[in-house]
Image (tube, rainbow, N blue to C red; front, side, top):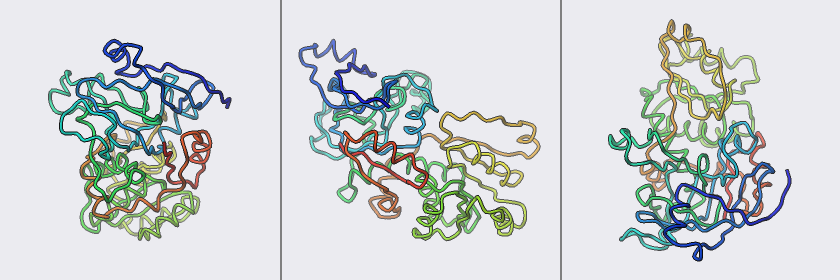
Amino acid sequence: MAHKSYYLVQFNINTIEGFIHLGTSQILPMQSLVLTADGLQIADTPIPPLLPGDVRIEVRSVGICGTDLAIWRGDYEVDLPLVLGHEIAGSIHESSVPGIEVGTLVTTEIDLSCGRCWYCRSGDRQYCEKKKILGITCDGGLSEYLSVPADIIHPLPLSVTTVQATFVEPLASAIQTQKRAPAKENEVVVIFGSGKLALLLAQIYDASGANVHIVGRNRQQLGLARQLGLRNTYDSIESNWKSKILNVTNGIGPRIAIEATGNIDGFSLALQTVRNGGIVALKSMHGCQFSLNPTDIVNRELTLFGISRGPFKEAIDMLDKGRIEVTRLLSKEFKLEEGTKAFEFASQPSVTKVVINI
């Protein structure tokens, strides 16, 4: 990938309106890690304007997600140039809303909803027909500053660092998965995958009393799972993992199977393993295409559902109370100017979580 530095005017959901509101003489540059057709580049971009109802965040930490990696590799097509990053934490730099103090540590949700469509008026803004998604359909957090609506930020307790707060967004999704597919006490739940999301899901289900089993292909990550107290781990390369899962599920397979590998193979294994009448939950299929036999789904009466968002307040509360371990999931931290190195490192199979500090 080529590397060059230049002044790049990158428009996001608020920029054009902000230019009119502020006037171009007040547009100041900041540094951003921008994904272009030539790769990741450090570039000078305009500091985002502060519109009514917005806060401006001085970004401190951003997690690299599997979606970010898929976009960077070109597996998940988006409009370029784009500032990636949606696992964001920082401090309030400026606020147009009274009562929000400068310096407050916060994290932010990632959906910028329109507030006017049927879904928004019904309280389901995550389904907004016109929403923008930070770091995916509009500029994200890998910049010095980011402006977002004040109603999507969440203050962080003193016990939670900005690095730990980059886990809030995926942890919230894991919580929502468990809400959508709750397990009974000691019920077997099989999670396919051993990365960050899988280990968060495993901890959530374990905390709820489920009997969690993890099927993964990376021995280092499976070892990390055992360090976290998740003893039932299986190497998917070994031929006997399926028989072991059948042994603990009376020969019929689990009622709940969760795909957290981010690839088609994991989804296929989940479908093959779940019992008739069971549930397959999907979270991380980044731009994948998969041929599905609807007759099989109908005949087996399977339930398939996807999860894209979850409750931030509950995730923050879990971190605050130490109910979920995230620090040991952190593989390495990088600086913004090391963006390409950070993405290359994060793409290694054994890496669980990478954070870029601004």
